[in-house]
Length: 391
Image (cartoon, rainbow, N blue to C red):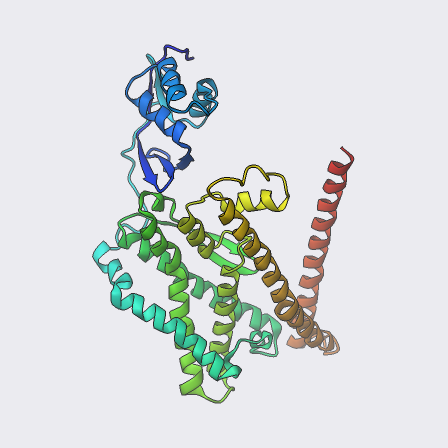
């Protein structure tokens, strides 16, 4: 297909240079690829209609300490479909004129109002005020029993799921507005994190932006969460006052939901919004992967580079995030589960025609199914581990 004298044509693309990293944007597929300097230089030279051998010779002169293998690089370009033509052979006809989607109907001028100086002040004041309210009124601090607004567990589950969905829509709405304020499209897809239903924003085009602007997109959802939390705490503290009634219970459930999700933002073993902020600030875009390898003690030499200290520091936060999750499990989820079981078992003594009987029965049945699936998953993982160990 190609030889050392071949000349190539790339698909429509754009190169983005950020700190010490370079990004190749495939305008046809919308994908972004992080590439090292030799790869970027190779693309630039090939784009200038230099042959493969000429490009390799130039790279060897510029990077004498690097092992340049244009053969492997060419195969990777073909595999990733980044080449549209090699010599006179057309690989595939492409067009970068596809209509773009992603909330383009939201005007940039409107979206910018949520991220001006006044708005940033509101987010900061809301954050500080929310902390002060919980510190001065400990009763406002979320408790696992805030989940149990009704004595019927299924009602609690449905209400919590509904509130979660609404709150996640607000969170993702922040990402959408931030992206539109910077003039880039954003897509929304459905998913889940743990038992929280989520709408996930696809903001891959954020790589077009300078590092500082990316943080606006990453932090927008958290900022919106904090404002909702502050308003909810404000209602509890100064309007409802007495910890009783439906509205107080709903606000308590909202606080419980948001605080848990904010805590999970600090669990850096997952790629949360805050994780991407840290990754963006450090300029190390494979931070999690590098940290995992470091913790496995497999790449001692590999981390002895410009990002070595960052990776080691992040590894500590990776462990802290895991401990935070363990703490949430022990002090929130387990007590919540035991309380639900404690409420459900007595319900089985009610007549079969009673709603309480069916409430307890359905909950316990769901619990048994979940535990069975979890046990099956654990055993499957253990079995695979043992098989690998024998090899």
